[in-house]
Image (tube, rainbow, N blue to C red; front, side):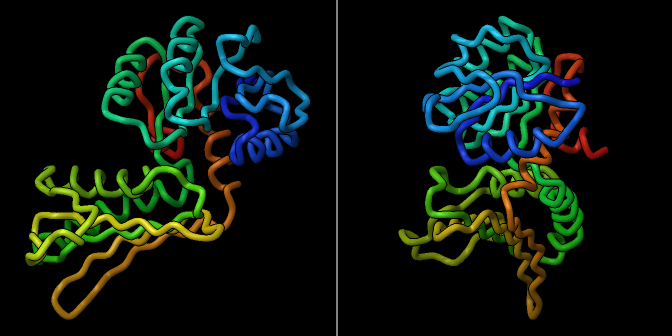
Length: 252
């Protein structure tokens, strides 16, 4: 039985994961962490911050906010607890802290926990390798609900990084063309963000060439796809050696 601390338990994803885990026999949530500790009635104890938590666990699933990362890492390092790190919007300093911490504890970090998105990352690498020599331009458009705080999404950036890595990291990212009066540079990846309504998550990777366009898309219709991925990652990570893991390690 894998025992989990749910960091951000009363947020949208925390509640979804709580509901999903209730029907499973090989994993359980033993404690939750949320500043809004009285908003939702849970079957496990909930603490306002992780330093107040005295419950031991095999792994932490983190779907909180970027501002809570430092305290989370300190706790995990002290207690030698693996982390499935799902929170997006981390700055460069925080990413460096995660990388340093992964030398001492196992951390699985993914911008998107969906199986489909992780397959999409593989497909766009293959497409970029074939289409870049033919002069195709690359654009990414992501769409999310109107309550999402960070833009562009972590998934959009991860898709861009996958492509850029495949192409030798020679591309620059462009997020806003409103102040530009110039033709598009061939060595750029445009990344556009749309926020509106209750869109769970849409990502389009567009390869635009002369007289033809190839678009590779993924749409999430429910946040449950991310919750299922996080649970699979938690089961995978429990008991692993220190290191920085990704969802590609989970899906094989």
